[in-house]
Amino acid sequence: MTNHLTPDAVEVLKHLGRCLGYLSSRTTSVEAENSPDDLRELREMIEVVRACERAIRGGHTPPTILLNPQNWVCVACGSAEIECLDWIRVNDDTVVGGKDVLWADDYWCPKCEIHKEPVQAKDYCAANGHRESPCAVCGASVPSTHSFPKIKVELEKLDR
Image (cartoon, rainbow, N blue to C red):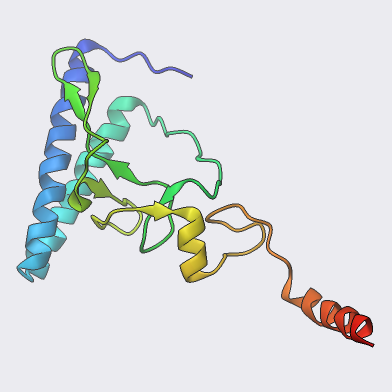
């Protein structure tokens, strides 16, 4: 389903995107300055901007990301909803690049609200373990821990 936006709505979305980028960058510097009240206010402003974006887009939500070990995920929480900055030509919204060289601060996880460089889902799971079966991060089918005793018995039979 495609949402058709008026030119005015597109302009407002551009301004909201710039505002969100600025507020997100300020969140990082405020965290470094240990200012909890300022940080709380910035996060509230970010939520207001996101609510405005959702209202203008008509509640459009992005498609679900399919689980895959090659997906990039948040290094802290494992979410695949990672965002990154990109260069976009402002007069016609053409994406002209930028993702080939990104600093850690250019990534954003909206789930846990951090700027960290993502890792591949397979590496996240190797370091942190799988979540459920199939894994909620990489999609791998994980053997049940209840099957391990049965495997042990079968291996003992082979040793005899």
